Structure formats: C-alpha cells, structure tokens
Length: 424
Image 1 (tube, rainbow, N blue to C red):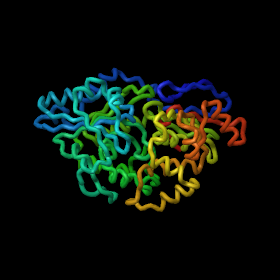
Image 2: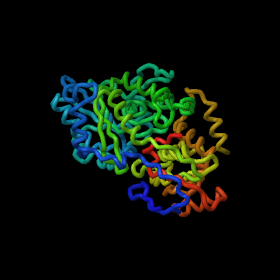
Image 3: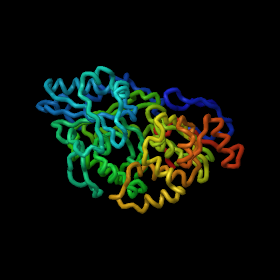
C-alpha cells in the first residue's frame, strides 16, 4: 500500500506490505465536498449568524473593537476570514478602532513573516496587530476566579473592548475536546497564571479531558466561563480538510456557533479504533508539526488504537525543535518516566509549572508505548525525551520490528492524527 501523509510542507511518501496494514483511519472531512468555495462559505456564515445579530449590527456604536486571532501554530485560513470581518465591522461603524489581538496562549510570539503568511501583507501593513504575551503582567486585568478556583487574568485589550469577537477553527483537541470558540480567550489571551491553573495535572488526568469530549470536561467549563466574563460577543470559526481548505463555516454566538461547528466536525472526524502492534500517525503537517510540543497531539490519536506495549511512529518535522524549554527539561532532567508522572501527580492545582500538561500527556503515552519520531529535530533532543529518532519510514518500521521482536507486526495508519477522534 502506498501512502502520502502530512509532514512539514512537503509531505512524506512510503509503502507498507498490504498484509500487515489492518486499517487506515481518516476523517471524512477529506471526502466532504462543500457546495461553495472557501470565501463564499465564510461570507454565507457571516450573513447568517447563529443566535446573534450580524457583525455590522453589533459594531454600531462600538468604537473599540478587538478581534482575537489565532497565531502561527494554527492552520486557520485567516486570509479568507479577517477581511470580510473587517468589512462588516466598518459597515456598522466606519470610525471603529479595530485591533487584531494575536492569541499566542502559552506559545512564543509570531514573527512578522509568519503573520504575513497567515493574514496577507495588506492586513499586516494596514491593521493594528497586537501580540499577546502571557507573561507580561502589565498587559493583564484580574477578573476574579475560575470555577476551578484558579485566578482569571486576561489581556486588557480583550476585556476593555466595546466589542470582542474571535476567529478560529474547529478540530478535535486532545484535552479541551475541540479547538475554537471559547479557547480564543482561555488559553488564547489569558495570563500565564490562568493558563497554568486551567491546565493543571488534575484536569489533564480527568477522564473527560480527552479528544472530542466537552460534556463534563473541567477544562471546557473554565474556558466557557472565561469567554463569558471577557464578553466574547461573536465568533467566526471554520472547519477545514487535510489541505487546510475551508469546508464549512460557523458565525454568531460563541456557544451556539461553536456547538454547531463541533457537531459538524464530530460527524466527520469520528473513527473506530483498530488495535495494532504499530500505530503510525502525524501532527497534520505544517504549521501544526513545527515542534515536538505540538506533536504530542498527534500521538494521542495513535495512543487510542495502539496495543499496550506497542510502538507509535509519528512523522512530525519539528523544524522549531522541542517547542518548550520547560517541556524539554522535564524529560532531560528526569531519571525515568515514572518519576515525571509521580512528580506531576503530586502537584496541587496551584503548583502547575509551564508546559506541565504536555509533559504529562507525553509521559502517559511513553509509559505504555515506545515512540519513534520521523523528524528533523536533533537525535539527542529526541532521545533525551525518551523517544527514538528515525530518518525515514523504512527505518522506523525496522526499528519498531526490533523493539517488538516481530518481523511482521500489524499496523494501523492514521494519516492525520489531529483530524480524527479515535473511539475505542
């Protein structure tokens, strides 16, 4: 069987013996054929908002308008989304002061080149872009307490807006259930302290903090509360296929529009697990596979279909390396995976450290499986994090066979690990 899977910008091609491949788990989003083009889908959503007045109507009399925008780590097709949002706002109030607040969450700031690639040169040149930095206390406003007990501290540009709106995309998310909607606020424009409280070890370990689950998810509850307190009035979220093309769009009330979006994505993304000795996965290619930190998401899809003691192979370019100093150092400095898991489990909600959530999930995976990365990240870095590095799929398969002591292991392939909800 011949495969081409997402990897960086170019993709990765390889072949596997037919007899060993049990299944290929793919989202139906890749076969979904929308009845309109990308721009028309966005325009249609804006023209037919869900449980909300239109954006131009909301903008009337609102002088200070803030659009929360996704950052460089998200494949949101903002070039199709931001211009019509700006047009609608200015139709309602031609004098509105509009700011694009880049929701970096806990990520590094985006570069100008990344912003131009994402929004287009015209938007970057002519609009006011503000980079959220979660560690800049002077940019924050204390808004009380989250349902979980953590402090709710948000970027002042967001909470001081007369009209706060957000763009984003909806995909399965490995602990928030789905991306999009309320996540633009928390973690998007929240302080470091608030992100740490929400991403605590207790919540990450919760059985409902998993891909495709919102009901009973404690992280989601905090996120919705934060969005309400911030006054998030309107969202434009899209669903995309493996080519990062818009296949549907949802605009309006942040809860109602997000719900319609997650229902749509759930229908397409749900796949049944097919347990195998080896699970091959990806993190969806660029920009989602820029670092090891992000690549943990793709590993969770394989986690749901790999047999205990099996091998996960993930193809993730990771041109930016590990993606988080604290994340990397957690593994570099630990004597064992058990030490990492025990240390995180011992911490109270108020004692969460940066990148702990990613460390916790990767340690959970490594406790049950061997992980081989096909990656551009340095070999030492990968091995410091208790994983193996391979230069090609052929090498990865041979390595997996050696680890399993089995020269004909059964294989399940997940071409896009962040695009599916693997159901056991």
